Image (cartoon, rainbow, N blue to C red; front, side, top):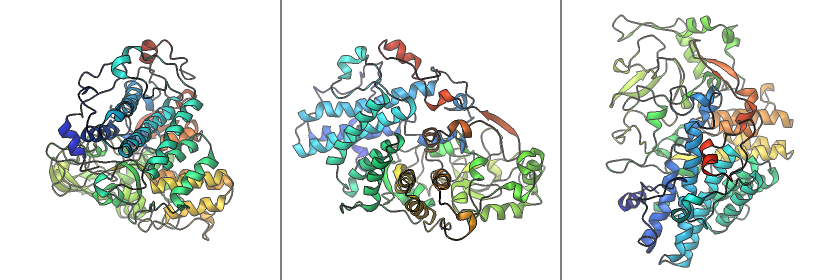
Length: 572
């Protein structure tokens, strides 16, 4: 999609909006548009552009901040949700609902108008299938966060009915059926692959994988298994060709462009007048990232401590420093350094610095490929100028002197994954528009979802086989489960499930899946009530999760606009 995004910019369609409460005055109407093949093509691309909206998929990684593996206490989207004080008028709750419906109405707009376009019936059928895939994707996002929602299909003409769109909520089951019906049609029509210059458009594999995910989330394990097996085993020889990328860290750089591991991803470009990337640098980067960034999302030490030793043993700081986990003063004394009087150099490293580095380096390689850990190095920037940085935990650190720091003077782990190094050799022009694609569905995710289906259908050996494929990617090369050592054993359904929980956390970190995983597993209340301190033991926040939080509230403003909407979610 990298090439045809430019057509969209020229068409001037980027600014169109499809809000439920506002007529889209800037939209080209069907009387002047939707006439030629070029119009159809541009309308199709407009559907994909909506993926970049940060309230739905454009900052999907930030959903990890609602789980235990990351946090956002920097006054962007998540703080009130994290501390349990949000209401049905919270900005993020309202914006997510509205933005998802914007995506739905862009898909509906194409479905409403494509038959009048002067193009072949084959092209019309393909465009319709893409629209159904996109509509299903957005409705599934709504189902995941809100439960059953009002269902508006292509029979709703927004510019004629925007003031009277007052359908009641459908049940979760009816919403699921609507999604699956759309995906069944998409699977029937979409191609297995597009030509290289059309890469990024929805494929049959993307539709099959999404259909499997919908079934998994709604506990249809046999149905989900059949879909995931189509992707993994390709029993009909369709030629999907999906496989794990040899290099895990390369997946989150430009090297992964058109990787066989990417099943469906948000396509990104940048450059003069072509800024259609994502804000990894701005949202995930430190003050020492390109342009100076905000740390809206930071990994927690809960995530860092999940990574096993390279031989597969579980890691625990208490095994190295007895009492570490409850002694905040000990944590500070072990990790803290001191700078020189002018703050330009390190006057005194921790006495155990070498030991600390050895501890991190002896772990699952994905730890250091995903996170910036204490006293490691990162090619960052002083402003926009590339500069080698060290992560030193000391008062007064500054990127001008070659040190990493966050936006609030805290001492947390930082993301290496997705965050651009330097200025990407001159490619990066704006901290808000990284050209690296973001995976919404990738092959490793499918392998782990298939493992879950196997485990739920009492095929534990098959589940282990799927998990081991992910663990033994060449750049990861973790020992296979059930390969000899006692700590690698996993045979019962409960044991295998614990391995799935672990592997999804460390493999998919910073990809936005964890919060939904914990909720669908019924584990969110157990795992998301805790007090959090940073690496130096300083208390930062209290995470609160209640029974009501398994679903977001329907935004209050929607009940005010629509008296027919129905009931609010339980607990709200």
